Image 1 (tube, rainbow, N blue to C red):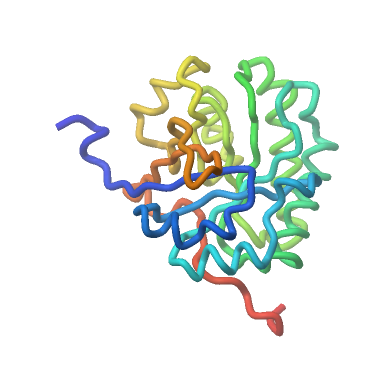
Image 2: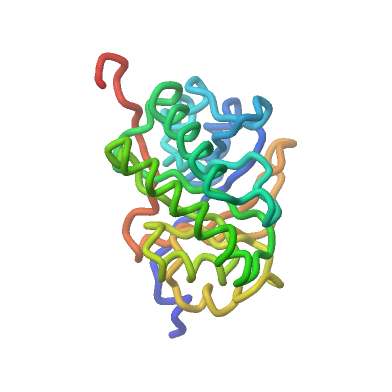
Length: 220
């Protein structure tokens, strides 16, 4: 039995388009989890109504923050602070994401070791600082290639890793085979006319930082 065969998994999807009207369809097709966005961009941002519908259908919701986040120049301490604060604002006041769950932050390109040292590590250090100053309401995850996922684990700057589907990116196979990932992104799928990426949730790692309820309005 290979390492990949030995782990316990369940299927999920993620996408930039609203999945509100597809919540029950996704559940009926056997998907157990769905990833949606926090962002400054309205068009891809998760809404509370959508979150409620996805959870009501029995799906575990997980969140990722991304504006562009697709080149080294877009990562810095200043950007990390700003995106961390906006992610926490949307999670807490808009969606009411439960504390102790995760917000992933996207590194959406084939980042190098130099990029990690000069840009991405300072970005995640700033995220950690912002979260700490806010009382550490959420855990921190990264969506990235294998190299960056492993580097940030080594840095102890993330609790969760989501390996991007780009098999040609740095250290993809090495990190996949390590089974250190919490989420493994797979090929695109189209469901009722809406495009998603498929995901494999690694239950052998325990939680992947998702949530199945929202904090009641009167709780702080």
